[in-house]
Amino acid sequence: MVDRFAAGWRSADLDEPTVALLAYAEKLTQAPVSCGPDDVEELRRQGWDDHAISSATQVVAYFNYINRIAEGLGVDHEGWIDAAGRKLPERGGDGG
Image (cartoon, rainbow, N blue to C red; front, side, top):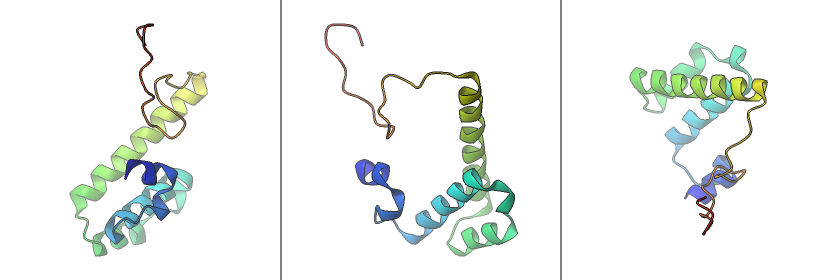
């Protein structure tokens, strides 16, 4: 499932509540000013409670924040993960 998700969450055959939450996370990341009460209400209709919605919003916001700091400072990407965020196989003999 991780590989399907990494390839694209929209085609990963996820349940509707999860798709709604991920669509909200994407919208919050790409166009935060466009998010509002209608988005929260849609998540509620999909079965998410206010605690889950708040938690998801905070996680998305935190990752966006920390990524902007890293990008702004030119921090190199972690060498132990690939472009899709999967852990690379450990290399033998060099401690890595």
